[in-house]
Image (cartoon, rainbow, N blue to C red):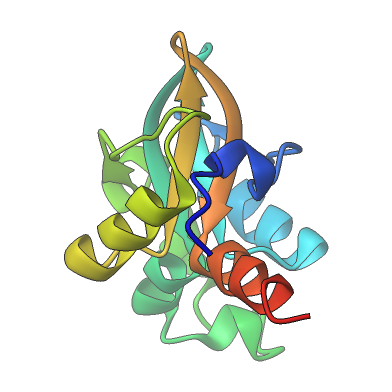
Length: 139
């Protein structure tokens, strides 16, 4: 399995994003509605951050994802997306190899990275995408 395939082969191309001016309720709605765990934060076309389900869970003790909607909703009104997101996230290009991506995931402990070409968001790639790719190699 010495392939040098690019992450464009495994990345999710339809990416749900939020603007840095959106509120955290929109983030929670997108996470729930689409059963996703990471959302890039954009300002225009530029990726300025990433926010994860774990980031929200740390704020709300997981209550928003355990059908206890009223419990921690006040927190969503008190904080902004920029206060919660990881700013200036590491990004990849669509030509980054899957092997290089796997190295980044293991060494830097990321679970998702935005894929950006020429300053424009093209996709997102996660550890789950890498595992699925590896499983395909054994079929």
